[in-house]
Length: 71
Figure 1: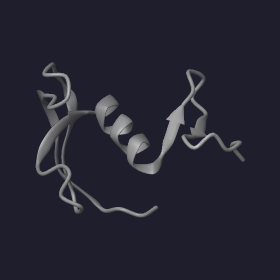
Figure 2: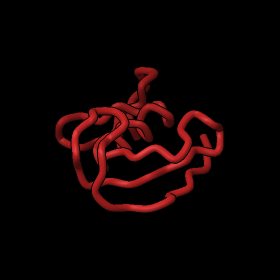
Figure 3: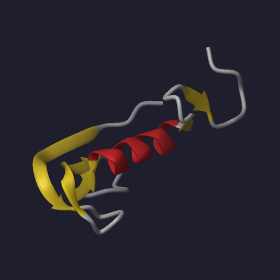
Figure 4: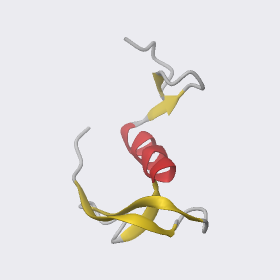
């Protein structure tokens, strides 16, 4: 899966997902799902995982969301 993300800036701000003041980045996704929204780094990673269909195990290894075995 391919998608384009524009990073408009980085710094400290209020995360659009959690509402908490945190370190993160302001992003826009070309598909229009997110437009100039500030996200924490954690929220950004979670969004990328959702968009790519991967689930991250606690030990940090990605697992395909469709149940296939990871390579």
